[in-house]
Length: 212
Image 1 (cartoon, rainbow, N blue to C red):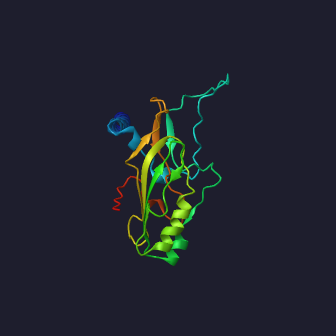
Image 2 (tube, rainbow, N blue to C red):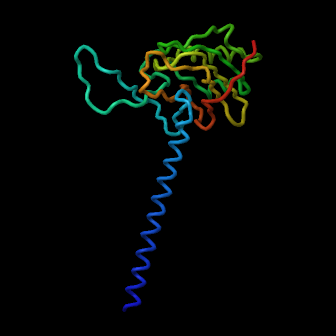
Image 3 (spheres, helix red, strand yellow):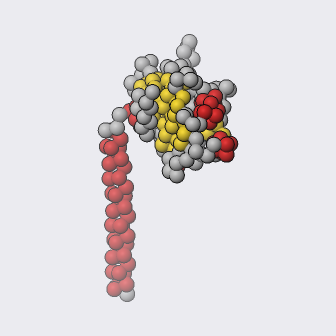
């Protein structure tokens, strides 16, 4: 009987030590994750595509004219396609792929501080040998609007023939708007509006080289 009690005591201590070890490992992992994020520039922090829903609510701005807004302080703003804009259209990847399965289209555009996306369909769309696909993609992309948190140049590369990444987005030249208070982080959310393209085929932080 005494031996059985002693064994149960040892087992309990072993379980306690194991649980404590797991908790310690979890704490160390979270601490390391936060340290690594602290070294990443705020403008480069991105939300993983696998965790992005198509419609992320845009964080509200502080109240004005005596309106008092209660609740937690907003810590993050999300720069992404503004799904509240009625004019934006979704690109049908499968339709264009069926017409031109090897389409290779690059677009150089600017995001204005208002979130409007502007580019010249003649000089800023590069699709040698794939003029139809380039024209169709440009018509859709021109309708896209973003939440008004960043501005600057953005580049898109639609590579239908690729067996890996099929859409690359270059955001390295985007900068947060000057009117965004420093206390807010501006993270990148969903930067494309495409039907029929898996998130695993998209690189939202790649480099797109365009030579005129």
